[in-house]
Length: 303
Ligand code: GZL
Image 1 (spheres, rainbow, N blue to C red):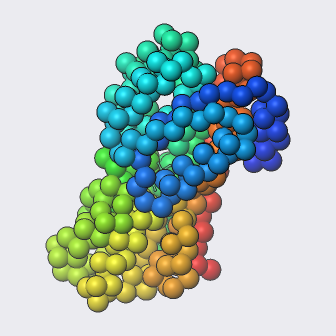
Image 2 (cartoon, rainbow, N blue to C red):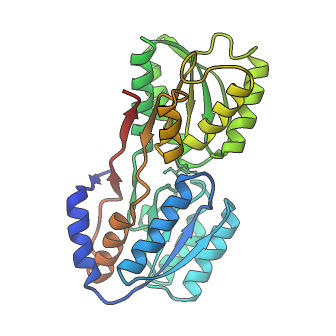
């Protein structure tokens, strides 16, 4: 599959062009409001739409796919100009995307991904590369642990593209190191409460994380919950146990500065500036696009 990486400057320039086209009505079906990154992404999508003169119909599904499907069908009934979806999980989208296609309404994926039989059911996906994020996290951990580490993994929402791909990318790297192994893994649903709950269970089951070298969390909020649980158990996250996660939200920066976390892979949340120009330019001039437009991710560490 051909992909295109956004050159950040070009995206802003194209945004200026896009803003010059007539006002459009766009329906945006958002996953929910879990954690810190999701609300930041939602706020950016709403403020950027206003700046660009887009009429945005925003629907927050609170993590329920059935609510996303209902929202997309409502957008179709309202005959919006385009639909943007951040799909909570990868499966279950073929039927509703076919209904949008039959209604002549183009669909764009933002942030997450879908698995559909017919890729023509959406125009393109604009997102970070979750597999790369997993690889970056594992490469950092391999270097920090000199290739030997028993790892606890806090997975994101089961069946979601970031959980699938971050694990896949992470495994692709640690499989190169015989002495690196995930010894315990469970989903904390991308929330601080979920991360804390799962880590409390790991602490009990692994006798205070005896022999555990690192925690890899698919997002910072679960890592923050794990840090709470570890500190309450008298452990020293970031010192005795390496802590690597994804998103780079402000609260993990604070934890890194306090020495309670070690690194986080940045997931940009201000991505409306990249998403809307692609949608508006397509509406002005419908042409075949690469099926994936990638937004870069960067690794941040304490030093
Ligand atoms: C990934 C995004 C994930 C974030 C989490 O692009 O879908 O969902 O990493 C959020 O913080 O819950």
